[in-house]
Every structure is written in structure tokens, then in C-alpha cells.
Image 1 (tube, rainbow, N blue to C red):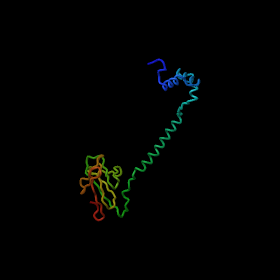
Image 2 (cartoon, rainbow, N blue to C red):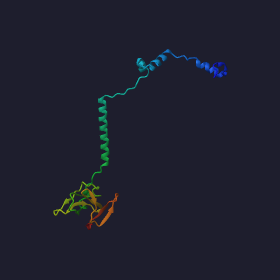
Image 3 (cartoon, helix red, strand yellow):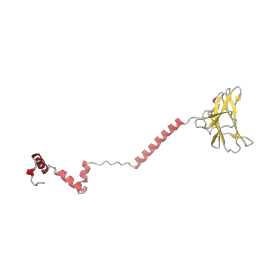
Image 4 (cartoon, rainbow, N blue to C red):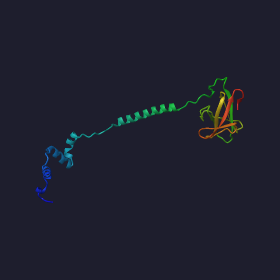
Amino acid sequence: MPDDDESLPQPLLRATELLRDLPDVRDEWRRDLQRSLDGGHANEALAAERFPRRRWSVSPITAIAACLLCAVLGGVVATSVLRRAVVPTPTITAATPSTALQVRFDLVAPTATQVMIVGDFNQWNAESLPMRRSADGRRWEIEVRLPPGRYTYGFVVDGKLTPDPRAPESASDDFGIPSSVRMVSRAGGSS
């Protein structure tokens, strides 16, 4: 490469001259740049004025209050959701005494420790109708007042849903578990 600039074309020669000229830089900028390169400790106050740092801080009392507020709001929301989700257990004797019939359910289960009856008449709630062990200890019994109609039911024997083995009809529910059907009619009682 030639050392003299005269061998360069005229536009390139002009560009070289412009690059050799130092731009006008304010002394203040040079001083700030030099201080930042030296570690910037002397210039922290000046930098803080020009570029203030945003620092977030929360007092412990404010943090505790915010947590308590979130807990209370969460409790309110959970309570309202649960109230809507809970279906009240209907009263089985809602029918007038003149239309409701006493229907007897029984199951032979001598080894069972607990038996409940569940069905569409109590929203399949295993806690609402516990059965009583008979005097001989082999049979579990309960009497339920039901208006005439068709009822699907089953027994919960020690936590396991089982159909009535003596039921004349059987149905399969949404979960594929067989359940029993009982027809209650005014003329012939229940079948």
C-alpha cells in the first residue's frame, strides 16, 4: 500500500481527510468518559443525577399486609366457588305424606362393618342414609319415604359401591358400575 495519499482517488482522499480531523467533543463528556473508565467512583454522584436508578423497596409491614389481603381475597373467592358447587342434599320426604310411601331396603352382608344406601333419591350421597344392622347381625336395613317413581340405587359396603343382588332390574351408570332399579308405585308398593 502506498504511504502517500496522492495516489488515492479524489473522493477517497477527501474521506481520509475528514476522518483525520477530530470531532469537537465537549470537555465535560471526555471527563465523564474517563471517570467511567477509571472505575467511576468519583463520578457516582454525577451519574446518579443524570441517570437515577430505580430501586424498589417494600417495608415488612406492607409485605405482610399484602399477603394477608391476598389470603382473605383467596378465601372469599374459594368460599363463593364452593357455595355454588355444593348441591344441597334434598329431603327425601319432600313428597306430601299422602303420596310418599315407606320403602324398605335390605342387604345381606354379615362381614360388613358399615353399609350406606345411595341413589338418585339422595344425590348419591354416601353419608346421608346409613343403614342399621339387624338383630341377627347378617342383614342391613333401612326404610326410606319415597314418592311413586323409578329410582336407581346401590349400596356402599365398606366404601365399595355394589348393586342390590336381589333387584329385579339393573342399570349401568355413567361410570360403568352396575346399579339397581326400584319402582315405587301407589298400587303395588315397591318392586
